[in-house]
Image 1 (cartoon, helix red, strand yellow):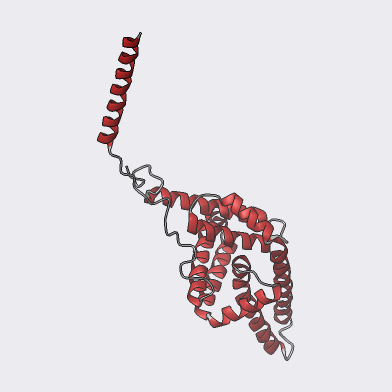
Image 2 (tube, helix red, strand yellow):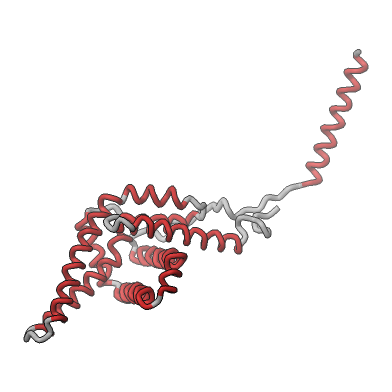
Length: 252
């Protein structure tokens, strides 16, 4: 009797459907928990943690994991988000100022410097919340580590930045893209990013290569049932019961 049958919970089709449903659910929870704006940092950390745990365990406890992580990361996640938001806002205003005052003699130089600083900010932002969700550290150390990882792994950093900017641009030009992202895109893209962040962290040696692997997978097993033995056992028990009844009648 196998757990891989048509309706078995380890059937590849059902597992794929279950995984996709998890992606949709976590994406919607994430968007809802981002609505107060100041909670975005905790929401990003909770998303990463929940997706990471979901990829490893596949047991469907999305809500429980998400809100537990949201609560545990709320303080540091919010502080990190506010720091990054303020710095990003200042750099954004700086870029806008030099664009609107391009007639100034030093405008082109200052605009270039502002763009470089904005890119560095974005590179750091890409790693801040995965590190917050995955490792215990101070706020300052998390930002410092995010910057160092970003500049030492440029191909990954640039690819992630391009993906985020590309999706943001699609949402800017198309309401259909916005609808698709809200419904399932956030979850799918988030899981993809989390999977690749985990691979990078293992490659860097930050986490063990076997971290998250299930050695004895409870979802992957087969049960061998000897129906003939069970049938003989039942017959034997029935015969014993008949003999006991006959013995009781004789005694009477």
